[in-house]
Image (cartoon, rainbow, N blue to C red):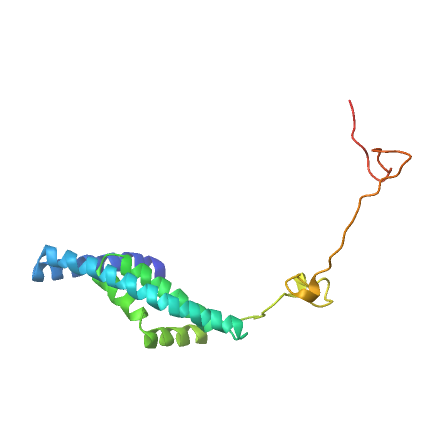
Amino acid sequence: MFLFLAFLLVPVIEIALFIQVGGAIGMWPTLGIVVLTAILGTWLVRTQGRMAMGQLRSSFSNLNDPTEPLAHGAMILVAGALLLTPGFFTDAVGFALLTPPVRMAVFRYLRARVTVAQFQMGPGPSQSGFGRGPVPRGDGPGNIIEGEFEEVRPKSQPGKPSGWVDGPKRH
């Protein structure tokens, strides 16, 4: 029901604002403001998005909870979509989401209403080899085993299957 009201009310509000602003300052200045806010919003989203990505990388490298940087990044993404949507109401909401105090307030509001069931960093139990600890991934010098191999076939029956599997069937 909330989404239905949002999809119904936002265009009505935008149309009313376009009529009011266009009547007050004219069509071309109104269109100029819409284009200018889209350009300014794109620049702000790029700079704030870079900062949010830096905070996210920092939280991952320090093994901190990445919830807050992820939420800020998502809100910056939503702000970018709102700023690229033509309209004064969506621009106002988009610019508000680009300010850190508003993002913090939204984050606190959402955090109070969302329950996190589990948070885990690193390989989970399904990836650890039946609960025996992390499986080495070969990304460090101690996890690499070098060696050579040579395929050995029995001399008595070259190319014939061993009996464990069926060989090629000919019809």
